[in-house]
Amino acid sequence: MRKQIAAANWKMNLSQSEADTLLNELLQTDHSLAAHQEAIFAVPAIYIHQATSTLAGKQNVFVAAQNCHQKSNGAYTGEISAPMFASVGVKHIVLGHSERREYFAESDALLAEKVNAVLAIDSTPIFCCGEPLEIREAGTQNSFVEAQLKNSLFHLSAEQIIKVVIAYEPIWAIGTGKTASSEQAQEIHAYIRSVFATKYGQSIADQISILYGGSVKAANAKELFSQPDVDGGLVGGASLIASEFAAIINALK
Ligand code: PGA
Image (cartoon, rainbow, N blue to C red; front, side, top):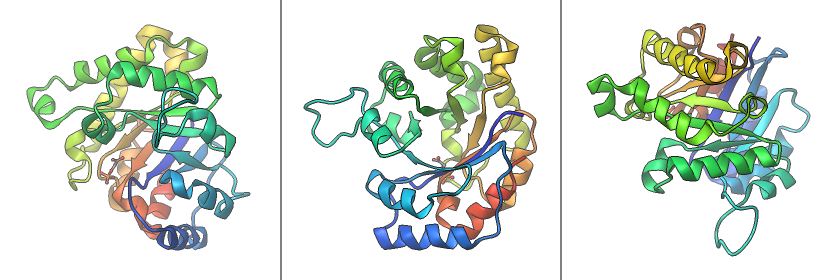
């Protein structure tokens, strides 16, 4: 079975002591991970060390970065590179979140470079894609998302693409309380898988985990994750509440 993943995206939230409280509350919740399941915490970079030590020894639990620079080192004040994250034990880096695309003008071409940077240090890019509301209303979401995937990922070899996790996040569902219905999620996840199947073959496409993101919470996770092509979620708001995120972990297939 493909990996099923509950990924928390804390974004730019929580003080150090709030982060500590949340992680410790989570450790006390009743959640469990099977061998094919993972919980990933994309925390603000400044808390990576803290989160890693709090979660140390937990099976199938990983601490991730929310972004990295495309270059490995140099005069880029304020930036953090993929090899730097690797040096502190980070194995997953979220790339191309719609907030980064919008507020930091991250283009498909830049994201292709970042994907290369993450794969070069043998880590997993959690590559985000997804359409804005006007594209969904025009009914052209499939071709919009397909272009994002092609432009940033299609230069990869088959061996590389199976290391990438996709997070489909319709922008109109992020932080809005509006979730795509499980049918809408399944439809576009299946389409995304077919895009990879056409390029890399079905058996490669079948190994790629495709997460859904956009107002995932305890109340809707089970139904979303029960769809055949939905392999878990990338969770913002609900990942800041221990009981919610524990229930989301427990909703994984
Ligand atoms: P949300 O955010 O769960 O708060 O909608 C998801 C995300 O942006 O990754």
